[in-house]
Image (cartoon, rainbow, N blue to C red; front, top):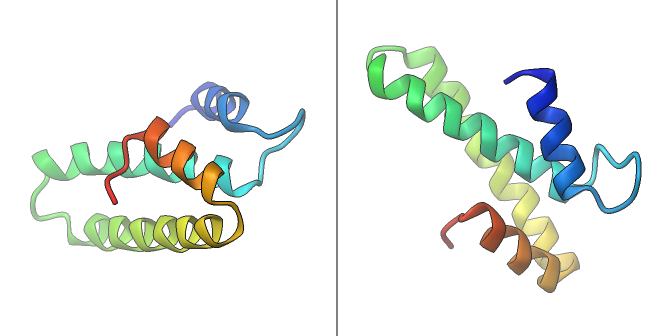
Length: 87
């Protein structure tokens, strides 16, 4: 993922100017990386180290989403709807 892609995602999901670390931004960035890695693994089936990294990213995103759901249900619902994450 390029630096421009990251900036665009941060700008779309930030809660205030300069926000780069809120749960919303972190989940959005992880979702983009998960999508890219999923595409990679479709053509490189035997790449087990990348698959392990994918599993770690999915778990990290799940923990962040659980935290967000506990703190602010409306932000959680809006975020999973925008990112098209099933749950």
